[in-house]
Image (cartoon, rainbow, N blue to C red; front, side):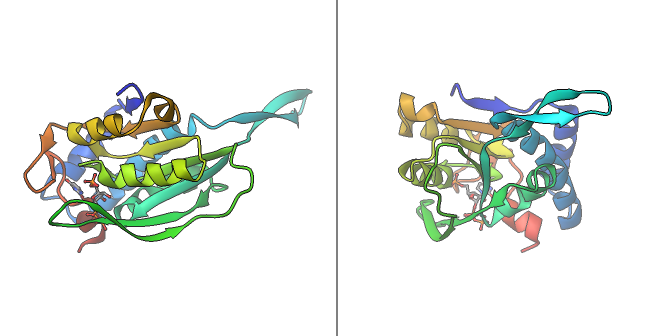
Length: 214
Ligand code: PRP
Ligand code: URA
């Protein structure tokens, strides 16, 4: 997929390896996730539109910049909550919205149970960043992207830790060329495959359980 950006950074690889280790406990897992969330946030925010803003430096007046887009971060409950720290810390003006989706354990199909999003008349400068650490079958992310496209949102980023090739193919096949112009997936690694239970291999197990200790 053209719009797939894999972050290549030694610190991301370092913390991702800590998270992949089955012996890493909840605290260290969450600390590592918090660190990686800053790299994802920096990359996801790189698409933000700017406008001019006059700035008086101690020496002269210059044309500075300020963020023009209305940025909305949209964690998919519950594991998406684990990625919020870097996003909020780097740009506290971002609005945090929530969508609740879980995968039915038998069918692996996404089930929506919650959605809270502010109302905007003008959606032209909305920039929505979906947070979901794992793109496995792709069902949860596809469902969320469809929802946003139907609402008229035209700038959609997905920030994830790990993707399975099956999930990326599913996203690629679900959306047509003109829809894909509005979508970008940012991830830290593209793993090997999904296993028969829909887990990413090698992966890190159940992201929600590991970060929340359930
Ligand atoms: C996990 C994960 C993703 C989803 C990915 O959520 O957090 O949202 O699975 O799988 P998919 O690409 O096949 O849709 P889960 O259903 O385990 O819920 P949780 O976040 O509440 O743990
Ligand atoms: N959700 C997870 O938390 N882990 C996986 O490997 C797949 C989906």
